[in-house]
Every structure is written in C-alpha cells, then in structure tokens.
Length: 302
Image (cartoon, rainbow, N blue to C red; front, side, top):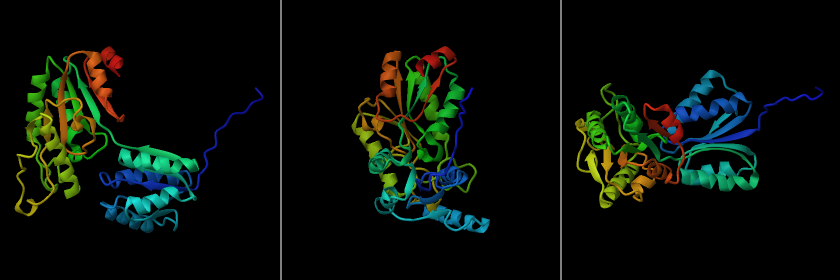
C-alpha cells in the first residue's frame, strides 16, 4: 500500500527513419507520426527510388506550419546516407523497414551504441489451406494476398500449401482467378496490377522464375512466356503477369527466398507434421494464414 507504480513516456531525442520504395507514403508516415507524438525530432531517409514522394510530403509539412528541424529529409543511397544516420552518435533510435540483409546490417552497426531499434524486414509468407476450407472465400483473399501491389509488399503470400484432397481443385480455381487479373497502367479502374518499381527489380523477379523452371517447377500462368496486353505507350514498361508455380522442391530458392514480386508457389501436403516443417522451414518469420472451418484445428496449427 505504500508503493506507487507509474510509467513515464519521454522523448529519446533524434530518431532515424529509413523506409523502402514499395509503400513510400504509407510506411513513411507510419513511422513519422509516433516519433513526433512522443516529442522526438526525426531525420528520415526514403528509398532513392521514391524520393519525390517524401519531397512532396516535406512541402505539406512546411505548408502546415511544422517548426523547422522537427522533421528532416535526407536523400541518397543507403550505403552512404543510411550508414551515416545509423552510426551518428546523436541518433538515439532507428526505425527501419526493408530487406532482411539490410536490417541485420543496421542491427550490427547499432549494437555497439545500444540504440533503440525497430526492424521490419522480409518475409516468405505461407498460407495453409485444409480440405474443409471455403474455397470461394479462401481463393478470393489469397489472390489479393499474393498479387496486391504487384506482390511488392513484405506481407504478401508467396507460398500456399493445400491439402492433397483438394489440391488440384484449388490449383485450377486459383489459376483461373489469377488469369482474370488485369495488368497495366493504373489510370483505369479495371487494372489490378501496375508496373514493378524498376527494370532491375523486374529482372530480379524474372531471374527467380527462371530458377524455378530450372528446378523443375511448372509455370501455370504468367511467367516468362506470357506478356500482358498493354497500350502502345506502355510496351516497354516493367510489367509482369501474375505468376503461379507448382512442383518445386522445398529446397528451391523460389521457396526459400523472398522474391517480392507477383509470384506465388503452390504445393500439396498430407500430414500435419510435414506441413509444419515446410511452413517453418525458411529463414523468415513475418506472417501466415490458416484456412479451415475447424477452429480447434486452426489454433492447434497456429
């Protein structure tokens, strides 16, 4: 009765914010707001591929009357500008979203200074579909989970494990729905997928598709042999059709590594033990989904 417990939230000082190109406004504001609310100042480095978005946001802050020095934007490459932000002695906290490789490098650089860290890194997210799942609802959601924003979201589903009893039916339905997705310039409301962020990234995604074929994978739609129907002025754009691949070994790089594009891999399973080993058998841990009408089964697998 003579003890008083209380919590005090105080600013840490300067927060470094490093954001990727895939959701350039959302992920930037997602980090800026809480840092500012708790009384910190921010130095933000957006991706060099989407610098204009941050530059436009800076203009909004100026127009809104934000005091100079509260939010600061610096532009440049990660190995130069990002490195300087992470190592600077006055940077007390770092919030990063991006690749696992870069995130672990930041953790190593920040560790000797005991800086506060928030790291949101890559994923190789799995969906599990049991034989009693509502396929209509399941496929509708997993199509969006796989191909939204061209698959350029860290939470996108890129591995789908389907019970052997319904595997062929699921595959046929999933491919049918994937083929319905329209790819092209986003000005039209009928377009679901736009261009990938750059030629280099498109080449990377195509490289993984090629690897899948070399590993014995079967491309059921999209891939390297099909091209989207595009207006003449967009023929040289960085577009890729939704790609569905089956028959890959678990050791394939397309199963093990984050592709970050409109590519998802399907595989059958029979036993729960085999399923858990495959779902957990990648060097990532970000998100997953389980599809079944049996709630106890869902909790058991989760």
